[in-house]
Image (cartoon, rainbow, N blue to C red; front, side):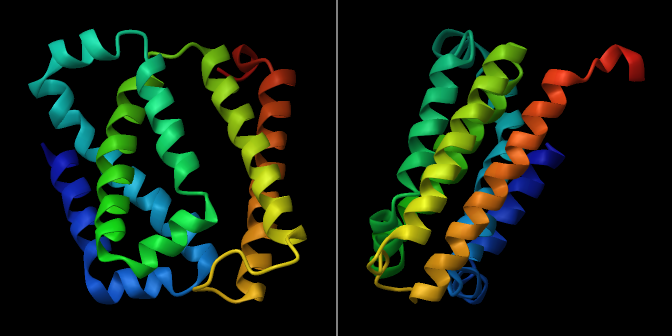
Length: 185
């Protein structure tokens, strides 16, 4: 119950107009800080839903694949420049962003992650690595402004943030591949 309370408190804090405006005023903070924190809020709130509706999660997300696919669809949607732009322009899209990232992405992520095998978890990380490399190159190499609400320099900063994150994920994958965890336990 405490986790649900902390997740709800985080969601309410992120929805406060001054906080939301501050986090959305810089493109890289919007994409790489606010959106993951919304997913974390849903991740924390998920435990209560798992305890209240265990049959639903077992029937709907028995092996974790449907939940992780829903999580991937929501996260990929919010990396599209047009979606970010509309979230800043239309209040209804802003509400959908908060709902989809916290409830439709965070809750399935928590329920699915423990059900996935190590290969499945690494496959998700590989998907994010490829997506981050692609989005980084898109934001850096695009000859035009992709988001009307942000400057070109914000776009370049976000692109380099994507590439840096992708490089860190590659380092993690190499570490997991070439390290034997039994030697350190």
